[in-house]
Image (tube, rainbow, N blue to C red):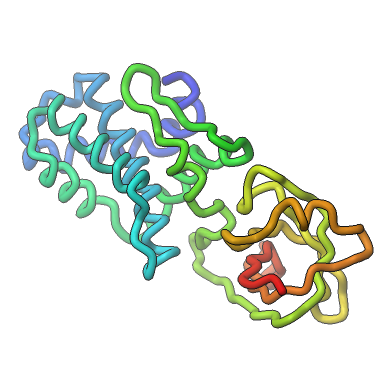
Length: 240
């Protein structure tokens, strides 16, 4: 739990304590506040739920995979059994307390924890002695850049059949380790890039540096501290 605590717990500790106070009576676990293992279970449960929330919000038309749904079911059942509370009661309580901006923050915290292993095919996240996330779930989670900032001020631009020069590659993953050079508003911009699931990584990896791939893509813009919208990353939707 040391790594888990160092990277996340400081950030969400107050929210977790609030969860314990607000939902203790409903869940019948008033004593959990003195139970370190119970608190850890609730924190991990919230993080796993947060990754599921992020997935379903960003991919509303795509049902969660069996691995993502399976992780969700496992951690809910572990918590329910340990705390002697019905699974649906735990999930319902967490769902009610974490809404709006709180939920967005939990989504970001969850993806932040899950993101580092995405660069290695088959890697996972382990909460020692409690729970290990399925590697297939890690691979399918959206990158942090796709989550909306707290201000929700962003916009997207669709590019069709444009040349993209590949600058960074990753043979093990379509969603991390890629970058491309694309022309936006008469300027060439290097952006982090996400490829479609069916992309041929090997072919793209060995494209000559001066030979672009032709593709449709979405450019995501975010507001910077000066109030200007700047392109932040590129999601390729189709490769020709």
